[in-house]
Image (cartoon, rainbow, N blue to C red; front, side, top):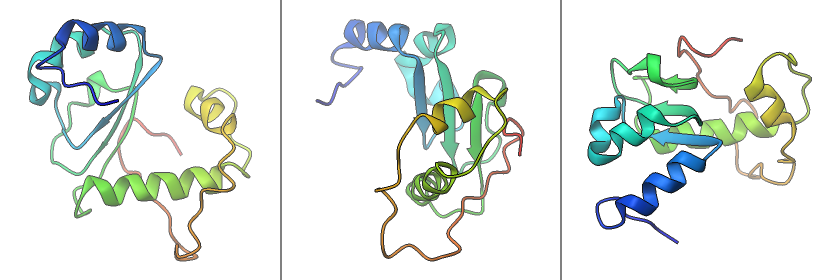
Length: 130
């Protein structure tokens, strides 16, 4: 189902309020979400940014990838999925909550056969620690 905030803002606010994780794609500041901005600012969910625009509003995102050299956020989502596939077989630091989440997901069957051997994401966002 697709929920359009402008048509069902109360339902959207409830979903945002009850979410554990929110992936924010293709915008660098919450103001670009218009009516959803306050709900996103007040959520207890961990917000993850995947974006290719300049000057991301880093203080509101728990984790993120912002790479202005990428042509699109879709390319970055692809890289993110490829990275998840690779991480599913790698031991990550336990103190990182995102690592715990990634390790709990079985992604072994998602890696596309056509993906290049060296396909890895570019993660240069200041919130991501290697």
